[in-house]
Image (cartoon, rainbow over the protein chains, first blue to last red):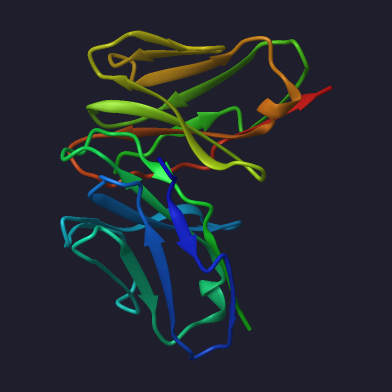
Length: 114
Length: 110
């Protein structure tokens, strides 16, 4: 099976712009989670989607949003970008319906905000 | 929140030696997972141990779990330079929200 794919891999934006990142989970996986990783804050949970519904949410402002499509692909959007949004954004998919399963991570999208 | 705290923060050993990393957490869990992150292969799931298990093996990895002490350990035997990475323990409960700590940075010197 192909792994989790994320596009684009690298992105440069300027403050105030918005950005959309895409994640394709492993075939058959219905849960997709998003994380932000920065040197200062480490890995932080953004949100999780299961069957097109947001099931869990982290402590991020409303500028960060996401959605999941019927084929389980997911997108996250960040509006009104700030310098502090520069980070590696990781997407992970999980195959089980419950909460107790390992997550498989994609390579990430490196976002730089200038 | 269910976050693991890894100890030590950094560990440096010679190739061939064993590496032991510890993890403590504060709430009740359903399982505990260990992940590894390095620049070459990204963030990778290593092993999952359920709350009713005490020990689990996978190749050169051995994980223990003591729910009474709310602690876990990861042992890597016969370490290799390729084991150089950050290791995270992630306790998980009844939500799909994984909270990562700062991890243990392991350096294996050839």
